Image 1 (cartoon, rainbow, N blue to C red):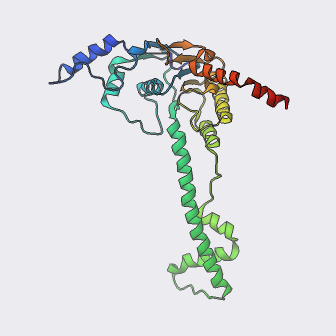
Image 2 (image 1 turned 30 degrees about the vertical axis):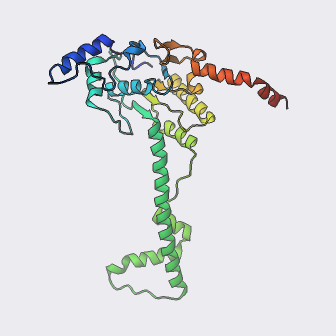
Image 3 (image 1 turned 90 degrees about the horizontal axis):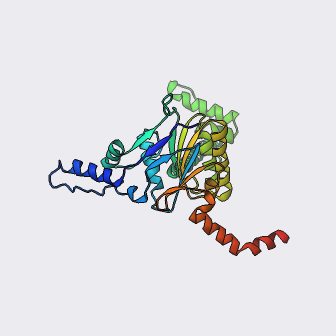
Amino acid sequence: MIYLQSYTLPTLDEEEDRAERYWSRRAGGNPHPHEYPYGMFPYMGLRRIEFSDVTIFCGGNGSGKSTLLNLIAESLNLPRITPFNTSPFFHEYIRYMCRWEVPENRGIAPGSAIFTSDDVFYGLIDRRVENFETEDRRRDAEAVYREEKARMMQGATFSFRSLADYDDLVKRLEVRHKTMSKYVNTHAGILSTPDSNGQYALKFFREHFRNDCLFLLDEPENSLSPRYQKEVAQLIAEYARFFHCQFVISTHSPFFLSMKGALLYDLDSRPAAPKRWWELENMQMYYELFEENRDKFEKEKRD
């Protein structure tokens, strides 16, 4: 399903014309500012971007793939989990410099969003912090249980004199009728099952993907082993094919780049243009690495 049809970036003349008119109204202003993201894309020859069910921006560090993804996300007002640090120039650039097309009969579906590698990372950290806090509460609950159990073993009596003693009475009854584990679970909660980074990332995407939505993913491969990169790529392919979702992804992972039917924009080439995944420079480097060591892999198979 196509929700975002195209996105058009400005030419250098358009950027400079806007800058001239904008800054000429300000005393002492520089008529040709280089504030982010001005001056990035015109020199790449990247103008109009067409989108498919799965569209991928690929390139090395500093190629602009994350910036482009954030431009699109802010243009469409897509919700995000981790705050995006930007500047007035960024939104001015979107307002006056960029254009986009969506189908006339439908806008961007509710539930659409941008997810970044920071969302997964901070979610993993939050879960670990919650477990640390739960462990503290469990230790406190265990101490209360042992203390009350020791009083009972010593034959301590309890006198209920007023409502102020009610909580102590309830606690004593709970300790009498519950095992330590049940008492601690009731009063302190249960520790979350510890996940690896890859397990948590896969669970994160499964929980956040919805049917009939547009999703922007910024380097989803971060912190993922090859196995989990492959599983997340398969999940994306399933949602695009069977659940009418559209994905726009920035990545340099071979498992995402080689997704069947994906439309790839190589931001390292000049001009930036669509390419097939096996034509990309980083994929050629992978190929060369394995070709140079082909005998080792073949020997491993024979053995």
